[in-house]
Length: 129
Image (cartoon, rainbow, N blue to C red; front, side):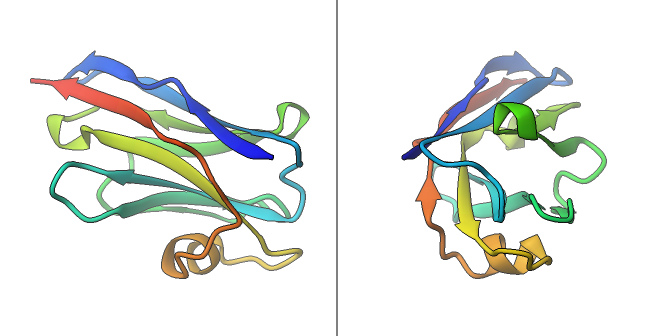
């Protein structure tokens, strides 16, 4: 049972990447999934989340208008599409999942609570200036 992120890499300012968070050993049914990032010397930042039940989403102000979260239930994968990347987006990005049943408000359950059932190992995103 694990979460695996992929899609990170090196990109120039203004470029785009799509990160994937895939679950193995369980399905996302009833889970809220969040994306987080942590840069060296900085605190972890919760940047986006989605509830699998009703599709409730949240995007942090720091990335709003540039990052989009989506899900492909058939592939049991959550995506974070990142456009107009900036050097300050450089960080290790990871996803985490928590079972919430039919509850909504993914921001509360994934980002604010900080309590997760599963967490991936992270993928490095580096944006060059």
